[in-house]
Each structure stands twice: as C-alpha cells, then as structure tokens.
Length: 284
Image 1 (cartoon, rainbow, N blue to C red):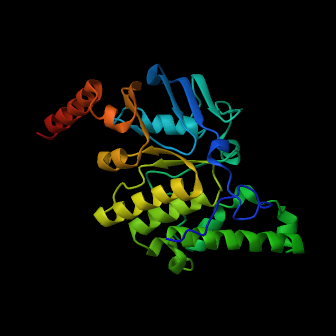
Image 2: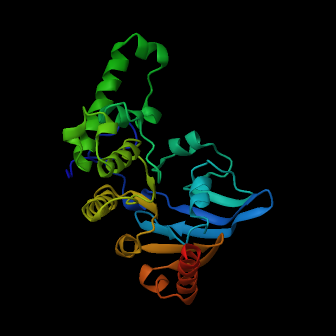
Image 3: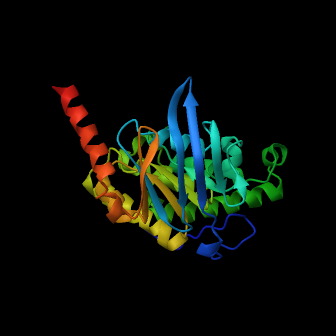
C-alpha cells in the first residue's frame, strides 16, 4: 500500500494539498423517518459523524441499516427529518447531486463492470470531476486530452495506494472477490470524497482479506483524513476501527456512543441475543 496518494477534491489543487480535518464537514442525521406503504423502516433516527472519524452503524438483520444508507446516498427519500452534509441539506437531492458534494459509497454486492479493466472501472469514478464536454472529448481537443491525462495520473496514484497497480490492465471479472472489493473502494476514492460510505466492506472475505481491508480503511482515515460511515456485521472489526457506533433495531436507534460502551449496553445485547435466538429457531 502506497502513502503517496492524497485527495484534492478538484483538478486545480496539487496532490499534496489535503484539507485539514477540521474543514471536513460532519454528516448530521436528525429525526429521519422512512415509511413504505405504512411500514416504518426508520423511526426518528439521529446521529452525527464527527469530522475525520470512523462511525459505524450496526444492528441485527432488518434493523434498517441498508435503508439508512439508501436515504443518505439519495436512493430513498426520507418521509421526514433532515440529513445535512456540511451546510448542504441532502434529503431532497438525487444521488448524483449528493455525490457531487463529496460523498462516495460502496455497495454490499459488488457493483463493478466485470468486462472492463481495473483502470477503466476506476476512471468511471472520475466522472463527477470531468469538465470536458462530449464534443471536446470526442474530438480529442487539447484541453480534453490534458484532462484525461490528469485523471489517468490520479487513477494510478489511487491504485498504488490501494495496492492495485499490478491489476490495472486486467478485466475486473478475472480477479478474486477480495481484490474486487478493494477495486470498489478505490473507485469510490477516485471520486475524491470527503465522506466515504462503506456498506459491509469485508462481507464474504477470508481472514487475510479482512485484515487487509481493515488496514486500508485505517489508512484512508489516517492518511487522507476522510470521514467514514461504515455498515458492517463483523463486530470485531467494528469495535477495533470505529470511533463511534450507532445501533439500530427495528428501525429505531437503541444506542449511540463509543464502541466500548455500546457493546455492553443492555439494549444492544438484548437485540443481538434475540436475533440469534430467532435465527436458531428458524433453522431447527
């Protein structure tokens, strides 16, 4: 893993210029409720992601974690409540507008183009930063060529940071699952985010791959100063990486705070033990 990559957010700022942690806006979720045909998927959920922190959202299956992520990224519209990213209110914005503000997301199920090379998949992450129009790009005008070269340089830097340099020319579909998960993270970094949303980043990985991904997440936070919002079922990883944890159960927030306090919260223990008992009963 290289430490030379630094996010810049625009093409005019040199790669070494990193915004200070205090300038990176926190995400503020206030009383967010989501209803689908009378079913309440989220019920007045509130939490704040501190600048430059790793904040985990956890809970049993069906707790509302995916719904929460979909609201924050603009896939779902909240019935009520507020989501603020810096000074921007997100609840009425579509996904591409939210991404343009500096939020990037990975998905639980890999969402890459398997027939494209790793390089081409990463270049897709540069789309929101592209200024050249369709005509100038099609005619390969000098300005479009210069911009494409800059994007190519950034992609190479990010690939080195994530440990993908040797795979850049390889079609994604030919690579192991664990490598594909890192490619998806790298593509999100190509968007130059200020907040990175990771949806179960180690799901389906073996022990070695999990450790590598955990180290990479730490590097993203510590080296790049990017705020991270994490949904993950691996409680060991959550407790090691997270600065703060929000626990959902049946769409409601039941605990919020430092991981060492949350893991001993009676409501959290009851929610997870109940979920385990129901799973065991269903399997018998």
